[in-house]
Image (tube, rainbow, N blue to C red; front, top):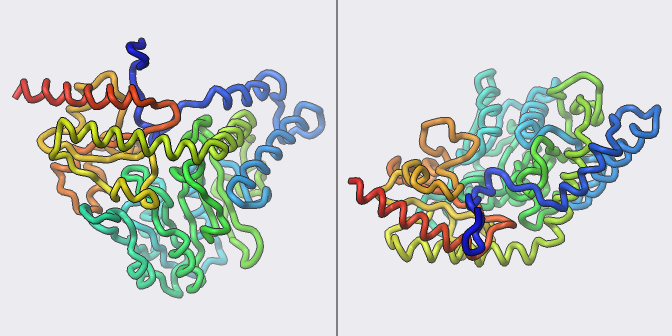
Length: 398
């Protein structure tokens, strides 16, 4: 349904997932109808064509992040990539270091494998972040990272851009500190690749996870960058079988997904500068519109005016006196999130907002807006009005 140029429901949950760009769909279609062979079946033409499509896509993705083709392997998504990086490094038989460093605000796809390793005898240090109200709320302080990383640290794992509050971490500086102690560095760049200028050489990381469905590509396909050269990154495979992907990740490759992944990333980077500017304008319009009807609204995360600190499409704020999930139920035509989408089945308040020192009532009153490629100014105006109407309805029932 569409009214006044706005199609319902209005989707503003692009940190959770994104709609697949029609141009990406077009690139994928031949892989289902023409080049549908198994990339491991090299004894016939269809298998060879599938293999060529995989390698062309691998090269495109590698170039896009400043890597070599042989440094990129494909997985089912960023969760698998994170697990392969964290568990693969830590559990490799030649790893003698038993200390791990990460942050309290990491995604559960990082925190859960880290805590499992802690239960099996590893030491784990989770860094705190700057508190709510600070212009750089959610950022890790370099001094704290430097004090935490020692000559016993085997791996430092940090996300580049946070999925809930959009804060961008100083990964390159922390990677430098880690390498001085001989530790490897893994970066969860799921929310960053395709949304900001990024080069693995500049970041200085040894491993980096990312996925297609956060950048208008298909679900079910991700990648792990594994730095080549010396010192060698030793990684214990977590899925074994046919020995695909250099033995790091066995399994039949998702040819349509990989091709779509490469096309999605290529488009995102071609349009990056203009898209960043457009999303910042839309976010500014949204923030201004929400505060127009609710001046007491509070921002969660870094200052929205600090472009270098926050993803351009992210806005997370608390609505004092309202429950976020109740607001959602009263806004059926607006798709947003009241916390990390991967954790929406869990009733606990957001661990990310809790790490900022925000009290539980404010956390439960929070909403996350993820603006993306297909959002418009008219949709932002609708969202502001729809939220205002929802608050009025809730107040009338009290």
